[in-house]
Image (cartoon, rainbow, N blue to C red; front, side, top):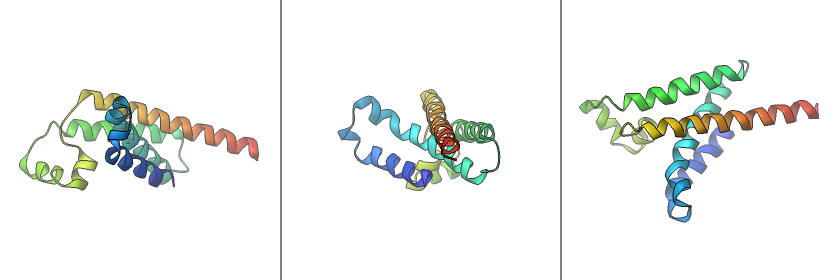
Length: 122
């Protein structure tokens, strides 16, 4: 559920960026993308420790960003599609690493709060 909600929020942040504060419009998509990556790993590795999902999220997100330094025709063709651009991005930006870090930390923090709340209710 968290992955789907995060994807919808990310797409909405792009479509309605003109309604957001400029700082939020510029950064929300990448922060939400990294949150979605974290939630995806938590879903796939539900029985593993949270730290495992955090580490894999960083490796995946940073790996995608650094892969943008590779500019071969075949991968640029994939990046030229909507789905390819959403997953692989288009060009390396150092600030994206900060956005991804923020998204993973926020996602893990929400996750931790929900775990603590669930433990208190049982």
